[in-house]
Each structure stands twice: as C-alpha cells, then as structure tokens.
Image (cartoon, rainbow, N blue to C red; front, side, top):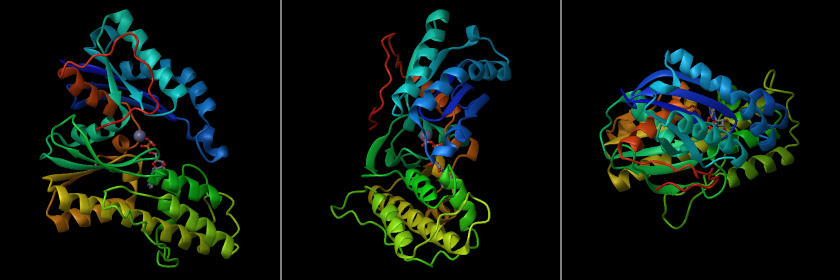
Length: 341
Ligand code: KG4
Ligand code: ZN
C-alpha cells in the first residue's frame, strides 16, 4: 500500500492529502485564504505565510484523520518545493521535512505544475500518451508534452501574465472582488461578449508562447476611454461591465484554445489535458471540448476540486517520483522559481 502524504503551500491554499498508489484519494483537505486576501485584490505574501503557519498542523491532522491513518502508516511524504511564494513554500517544506525525519519516511520533492498535470491522471486513470497538457492557473500558463506519466516537456509558456493573473487583475480594476476568475466567469453568463473587440496577442516567432498583459492593458484603456466607474463588489454589476468582462473572457479563452489546437497540430498527441485553476472556467471547458472534438482527440479535465490548488495532486505526482526513486535530502529548500521541463 503506497500511502503518500501530500503537502501544498505554494500560494494561498494550505493543503494536505493522503493518496494511495497515486490513484485513490483517501483525503484532501484545502484551507483557502481567499477571504484574507480579498480586501487587497490579490495575494499578500506576508499574510499568506503567516496563515500557512497557523493552518499547516490542523490541515495535516485533518488529512490523516479523514484518511483514517497515522503518520507511521505512510510510505513517503511529498511536498511542493516550488515554484511559488518563498515564505509560503517554506512552511510546507519544513512541515514535510519534520514529519519525514521523525517517522523516517522518504521525502519526495514535487514541482507544483507537475502536480497540476498529475491531477488529470489522478482523476482519470490511464490517459493515452503522449498527451498535450495545458496548465492554466493564477501563476502559470504553460503547454507541455507529456510522453509518459510524470514527465513534462515544456513547449510554450506565457511571456508575461498568467491567464488567471489577468482575470484577477481585470476583476480588481473593475471593483469586482477576488479571486477574479470565478466572478468574471459568472458575470459573463448571458452578457454580450462581442461588445468590445479585443485582439488576441500574436507571438511572432512561431513559438507556442502566450501573452496576456496586452489584453489587460487594453481593458484598462477601454475603461479610461469610456470613463467606466468600477463596481462595488461582485453583486449588482452594471451591464456595461458585464459585457466588458465577457469580451475579455472571450479573448482569453480564444488565446488558450488556439494555443492548445496549434500545439496539437504541431505535436500530434493522442490526448489533451486541461488543468489548473482557470480550467474551472465554463467557457474554457466548453471551447476546449469543442476543439478536442474537432481534432478527434479525447480531452481530460479533472473535477474542480482537483484543478484548483490541492495536495492530492502533489501526493499523486509524488508517488510517481517516489516509484522512480527520487528523494530529497534534509537540505531540501523552497525554490520560488523552480523550472519544469
Ligand atoms: O491553480 P490555482 O488554484 O492556483 C495557482 O496555482 O495559481 O488557480 C487560481 C487561479 C486564480 O487566478 C483564479 O482567478 C482562477 O484560477 N480561476 C478561474 C476560475 N476559477 C478560478 N479563472 C477563470 N474562470 C474560473 N471559473
Ligand atoms: Zn496551482
């Protein structure tokens, strides 16, 4: 029985999970700090680390209790080493180290984005390989080729803002609240997404990279030009703002789906994976499914509880690394800019 404890504290979620053999989730506890950061319209790193320190022990204890196991029953402890906020990462790394050291368990380092990709295998089991994985979150927008489970080859990434970051910044600009993605997703329903014609950034060197900062600036310029006053929260939002965010969302989703389609045409995968917090987006899910059907490829999108930050995905990725013999020493350090592939 390969019971892995996963620990995730890279951003503003304190999470712990127990996963068996990289496939069966026995528990997955996520303590969100969204309410803490909401008044600031984004994550405040200092506040995030402080809340991780307060939450980490209760969250790990809850994960063990829910799974009905003790620390001694574990095969290994997997922890997000990076990328992320250094102060936040450190809390998880130190907690995982302490548990592994005291109970003499192997310590397995996990790349946060490899965790997002692993969530698709965790949710869907076998996936035809090679797969093409689009990871879209608040911190990342990257396209990977996945030749085998646990191996990611980077094909393209955002050159500036991540797609989720653009959602959050536009929501902040328009006074809609935090996190912006789900709010804009909801407000866009039934709004006129053709109200403003935003152009999708074209990366000229033929690479598979993305860019979202121009779009964010275009929204800002539109707001100034049309003298649009920000809303007072996510409720009772004027039609003009709903149409604006729907138009913004249409452009973001078009850019993401175009990247996925072009990647598939160039690399001929046997399946597609869509994951990360922004994969919760209803429009993206719909359009990616249509693009996959057009390409004749199966599309794997994990359920919402696994696409946004969680520790089950870290345990799942950790299990694959564990089986490959990857181990961290007691000198394991948080790596805020850890690269992948
Ligand atoms: O993966 P995640 O939980 O954390 C990071 O690793 O960043 O992703 C969080 C991001 C936030 O930017 C949030 O606004 C975005 O995912 N998000 C969404 C939706 N739900 C969450 N973006 C668009 N539509 C959604 N429904
Ligand atoms: Zn994430």
